[in-house]
Image 1 (cartoon, rainbow over the protein chains, first blue to last red):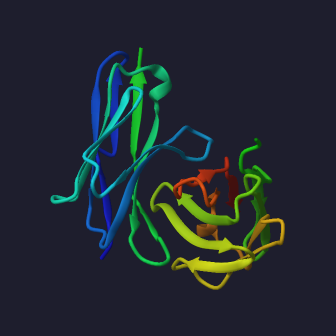
Image 2: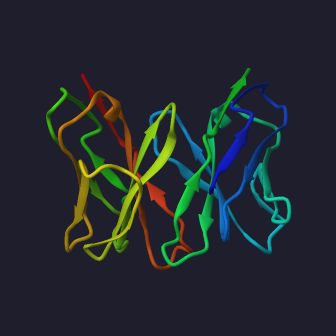
Image 3: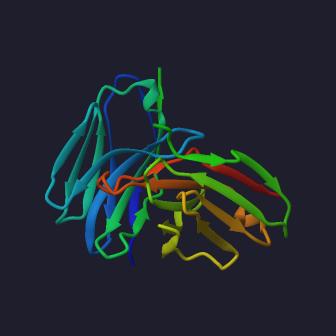
Length: 113
Length: 113
């Protein structure tokens, strides 16, 4: 069964600290993996897209890693800011004609001053 | 360039009624996908339309239907509403030149009483 599991479900950190969010998947065949940020009351916004051959990709203070062998990805946020408070959703795309998406349940991050 | 626009933003209905939600994709995008987001189930894929044809479909009952017009605008209809249909309904559009990145609208929050 194609599944995407994210941990932790929620996280509270102090402003300026770093944090790492985890995503494990059992999706097969794999096409690519994406991390989205969803602010409260808004739709998700793409942060990174990682293909099978990519191990690390950065987008500002966000760095995503992918280990296709262990089927794990992480999103590392450096020097957190209050505006990082949001839900972070891991999405895995199946490598078939339909390009189906499987969503993780998300990690709710709260950055406190 | 305008983003994905969903209307209405909020909607309150009672059980048994039907509802139609609208989505205007980013100009030039031909693919429109619909998702249901609830706290318990996370983001779940409803269906995708491309050039007025349904290309993919998730595991939702037949009460959920959609269509796409020649200008790529899409509508989603839910008939015989149930309490469990209360959710945030997100629409996402995707263009041919965006490396399959989906751009999400802000969503329509539907409450069924």
